[in-house]
Length: 298
Image (cartoon, rainbow, N blue to C red; front, side, top):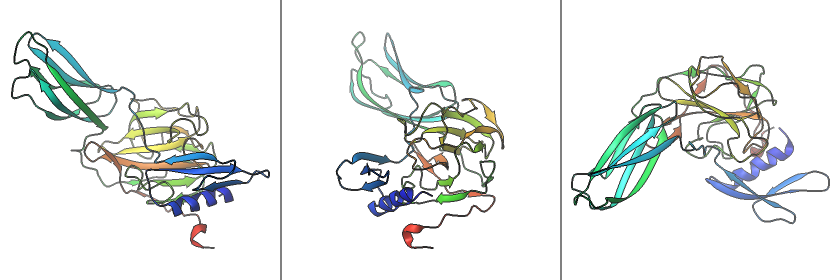
């Protein structure tokens, strides 16, 4: 691991857990990179955030259709996974009693589901309301099954550079139990478990605009999801909706997004109720760890 990466990790560890932090990065005349919590001459702000900030880009949306007596509200899911949604209605105007003000549903993949109907108390006058609409991938009613994951790469052996609860970036609920495996860029990445590809990103270069960089998200049959992050630009060879089995080629490892060196970030998540959280998992073979230089180990 490069010395500057180790220095960066040590500094982040000293900062303590946070969902977002601003550091300052500078490069001297000899090309040596330094990071600091405080502004430094020539330093540029470097905001580090939990990498799992994936958006569904309009693939899950609330739909309203008016009719003579009021408004019908439904939700559309264009993803290849079930999605849990919650609709909260406030400031109802000209609405008959009995309308549901809080509605939760699980939408099947590629489906539209009715949520509620607002019927006018005074026909001929408009129904008014204020809505709040939330959603999360997955079905929280599904129960995960015990599973030991084969390593999701070909080649090696490679080493674990950051494990679960790592203070560098594995502190948020979405990535707490992730593992980072240091490996050269271009290493073949394969599916560690059968499932359906439900989300991909393939166009990011360098840090890009997405902290996860290029990635593949796979929904397993028990409702859990495996996510493979920081992949090489243009290397993703699977598509959303595709069924994969163990060993299916997914992409090649890279160094994109919030990454300070070439590695694969692998995490398993499940919906815990309108939120995705990482869950503990194990590989079916030992993966050794790199020495923790910040702790004074040899």
